[in-house]
Length: 275
Image (cartoon, rainbow, N blue to C red; front, side, top):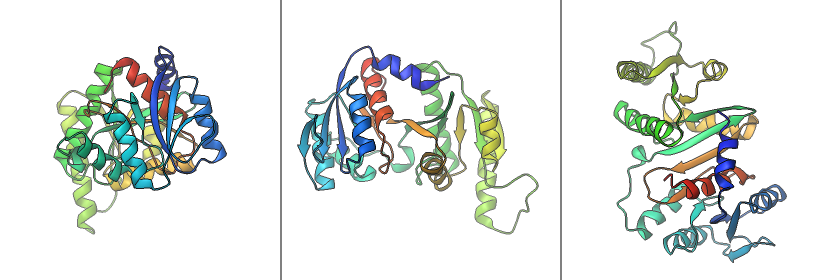
């Protein structure tokens, strides 16, 4: 499925007011904001960007606080984190919304990578995720539910590891432990009737097979892989919205320059009440 077309159609239903934090308004970023303004009334927090409603705040942490305050006071209908810190901004969110913080290992957000007409969901892309079998099961089953119930997509899961079946075992305990965990995770998915295949360390094969849910071995690997695709591999990151926060909170990667699709997805979520 081409998710970019789906989210664009959803965003066309109604224009929404979206807050975004921009600290470095380089030409590519400004261009993406202008392009997205057809679908969203943007409030830009941080740097002054001509042509938009601005709340100028050069301090990054204070910009995060203002962005969350706009959401809390319902002055915007959703936010895109943009170019402020991920962990600090989420910490401010829990504080301002008076919510018990979700443990890092159980924070679930939907990442979708796209190139040409091929898209796939990616999990375990924060360094804190997927460090235990239980955490990985929790995260992936929540994403599966989102795919099936909210988007009508049947997951075809690629379970990744860090060794090939023929690789030597017993030399490094950490590698052996991660490999065993990935295999146990694959076996769990199969036992539950999911369409899953173990690809070991061959991420390229999982992509060539057009699997639509790719699960890296652990967060350390997933975080590096997604950034390599995004910044060095000519892929785009369509979405990274948090689930189960009760609001539209689109995350992302701070060094991105083009925020068009993050804004489009935030508008789509507002229009479809997918939170």
